[in-house]
Length: 163
View 1 (cartoon, rainbow, N blue to C red):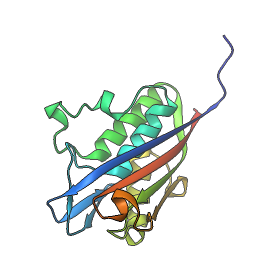
View 2 (cartoon, helix red, strand yellow; view 1 turned 90 degrees about the vertical axis):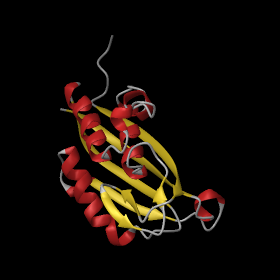
View 3 (cartoon, rainbow, N blue to C red; view 1 turned 60 degrees about the vertical axis):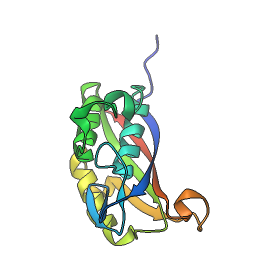
View 4 (spheres, rainbow, N blue to C red; view 1 turned 90 degrees about the horizontal axis):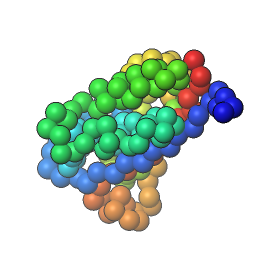
């Protein structure tokens, strides 16, 4: 069997509904908001999408396979720990993160002011410099569940490089 190319690309997507609360976790940062997130873990859609992107690049399934929502060990889990686990899985298989690009989709809260700290937290968890991590946001122009303020979504793309 021929050697695989020295790069892999993965993409991830996550969605959570808003519920009771006074903040949302995004990119490992507690962002003040008039709503919380309905989730088994801390509900960090940015990090969940990033985990799925990493797992996809590794062909290891998805976040639900590794951190099942019916497993009480993950109730209220810090998603930075989930991300560190996924990065470790990559490292065990000889891959390192080349770069990551994360997009958060919501009308509110405003992500831009928190994006630099999100980049730093994600980069630290992945063992790379902040210049290898992009975090940005967009709205859905008041269309769909994110536009109506019912929830929040994120998508991520990663490039893994053979170590």
